[in-house]
Image 1 (spheres, rainbow, N blue to C red):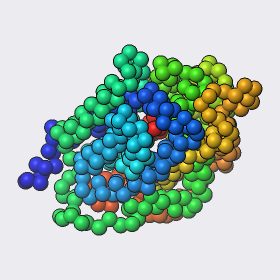
Image 2: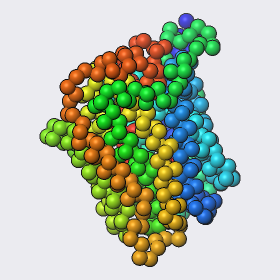
Image 3: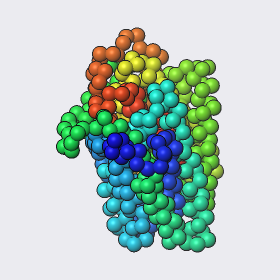
Image 4: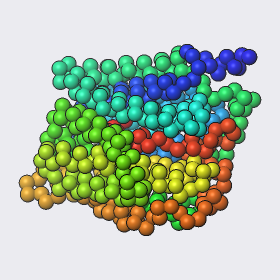
Length: 460
């Protein structure tokens, strides 16, 4: 009975609302730092700022990709609460260092990538406490909370910075992060039932469970899934790079002030949510999955080209509206891959896509930083007479064009079953669930709104 008591140590029984609060507080704390981060980044790396930003975010993203399956597998064995605590502490640890030592701040951001996988543990937490038919709704609630935190916090941080200074912003963000840690310690109950845990420490974790490339190795085993994964790679690589540098680009090259950046994030974020909740359903019913994917890729291509050639603030605002429309791409891709795989293979197939996106989170920022460096784009503003103010964005548009061409060959529905080609019903995905037989394979599917990154702060 003692172990049963430990399971629910906290306040109340495990619920989706515990997960919602954890996510809100973590991303709210980082959203507050939008304005101070841009200032500190510019002051710390006055030369080759875009290159250094890309390297920092690239290292962080690659470490997150490498560590996510291991942390997920460990949380399957030893419980969610302890790993929620670890991921939040290490992810938020760099926040106070912003004003203490900027060099250490950026170094710790890079290293913290090894633990910046709170979403992975949160999704597993939600899967533990929900039935299969409830899971998509619960995921949507968590993801909408994430979106809401990033719609509101940059504006609040910009206001505090303008009237009270950056030091107060960092202090408030630190307090919010500490509040999140205390909430996990004191309020969040464990969701993983004791009977599903090993009797002693040291339970084996297989290499397949911890291998970040495990899902990617299965990509070529089905032609339809292969086409979808290639589409995801070429469309998400520029997207990941864009979010690592775009707000810095708006401020230092286009001339946005902190208030304008906060307003941009809020407006594009709200439009993205509307696009994915209202427009997406209409398009899926009227033109189908594949055509919705193609439409989303078309919007993304147009948006990136506009960013690449745009030199005036109004152009960025107009392209931002198009960016909101392009946010329908990944939900449509996820639905398309779901239609082309058997019900017992959803986790495996979606895990492949998640693995590719995780890899892009490491490659994209570094690639964008290198392209900025290659074309000598620095922080002194636009070069007079420059034909292409933002070369990386134009490069991204070309990558999305390749994704569009590949997507043309994706069938609306596969003509054959992929039940055996994806590696078996119990194949390991990003976070293995072999120690939890009561959980469905679809719990490994990351919610779609997690990737509504028109509002994602990629320096977090």
